[in-house]
Amino acid sequence: MGNFPGGGVYFEHFYLSCLAHASYMAGSEGVAVVIDPQRDVEIYLEEARKNGLRIEHVIETHLHADFVSGHRELADRTGARIYVGARAGATFPHVPVREGDEITFGRCRLGFLETPGHTVESICILVTDLDRSPDPFAVLTGDTLFIGDVGRPDLSPGHTPQELAGLLYDSLHEKLFRLPDEVEVYPAHGAGSLCGKQISSDRFSTLGRERATNYALKAASRDEFIHLLTDALPERPGYFMRDAEINRSGAAPLADLPPIPALDAYEVLRLQERGAVVLDTRPAALFGAGHIPNSVHIALSGQFAAWAGTILGLELEIVLAAEDEDRVSEARTRLARVGIESVVGYLGGGVEAWKRAGLALEQVPQISAQDLARLAVEQSELQVLDVRRQAEWEEGHIEGARLKPLNQLARAMDDLDPHRPVAVHCKSGYRSSVAASLLRRAGFRHVRNVVGGFDAWKSAGLPVSTPDPARNYIRTWSRAKVEAYRERRIELRGWPVNLTSYRLGDRFHAKADNISPGATLARTSASTREEAETLALARAEELLAETQRRSV
Image 1: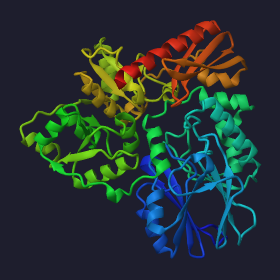
Image 2: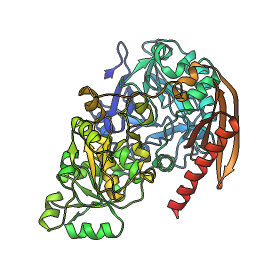
Image 3: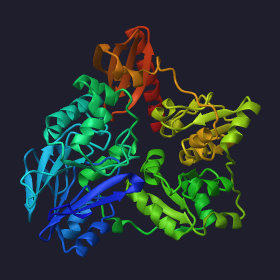
Image 4: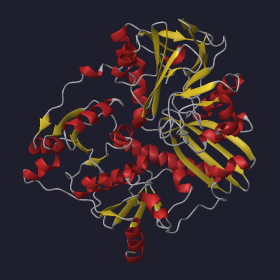
């Protein structure tokens, strides 16, 4: 980007597509600030050297939950001070930022707004180029305001999503949108991030444009905004809270991680027998053609690290299977960006070395959308699984398919028959290959992956089904008057649970949220409030009981 148009303040935007993460550098008169740095910080040091800048300030807009930040390493290597919201509870040396605080260097002035909602400590940063105007021309919004969306309100333990959504509404309307329409918006994430639901692929916007087009700002009231954000809140990945805690103390430098050794096939086999997971990072076609039994497939080409964190968590020992050592190194770095540091080795020589050792490979047949349509007619016992998200399903799906979102699949297989054939699809084929590997690990022997996914199904002109709008209360509630809203806290199997219920038309809807860590447990509807709440609590208790059993 270089200089802002017409001004003397240097500005650079860094975008890490695999995590949909945006970070920034601003500089003036030899001094620079880095905002929301990724874990591998060499790119900022190189950019500063190239432009004759000295990094003296590092700012975190909040304790990020979807990736591990490099703020501590960057400060250690440059002597910079770290700034973070006063409510963060950070344990590393830092400057606690409060409303109205400022930093000035050269002709650049940064002003801070406390904007709780996404998290309680969230801040936004007003950027002023004093050569242009005494007023700010840009705001770095972190995860408070995205392009086309706002931050998810469930990342501060001890606060319900409803409480955080209310705080977010206040931050948006009482602070950000009191600024002029022409102020430019630079968020911390783009399309594909798990921190929002429908973030635009645009990298920047203006407050005026967001006021006019952002769906979340269309809510007519604070209560409607709370419903809009929390009634269809996607499940939060389990690793999010761990990453936030790592960022609260500051991660160790990447260079401190030990080198990972090359292993022969039998060493990998022994590690598997001890509980290690083989993570196959090759493309889906190569995985399908032949892979190590019981391996998990997450291709390096997509949102690899986010899905690895979601599926595997941060604790399991991992052995990598990749095409070559360069991809092993890339996978290791990308895993570390989300806090996965438990890579104990990689299969030297790749899958070919496994074959040369005389060990068996397994396969996952790759089929086309047309093949799926034919098999659905010919094989009445075929189970068709759609592993996309709920919102994608609502926009259209294959008749007879069963929705099993990938992030929930591992605990949602009980009603599937492992002896019957399964065909699994997503939007394009990336997530479905991950799902196919999980099904194989769970004992499903006849699994097929649909190449091209639902996009290929639609492109082939095959029939698409959509939900009954009258029953789809998540999409229709904001278009009608919600009545008899009630919210209360209860304890369920030792967990604090927030139970909400309300009437929409002639039916009551209920939702149970786990207050800490904040995941939605169940959503139900019925003809009476009592029935809807009873169903929600029963399903929530069942899920919590299963969670407790799995943790034993």
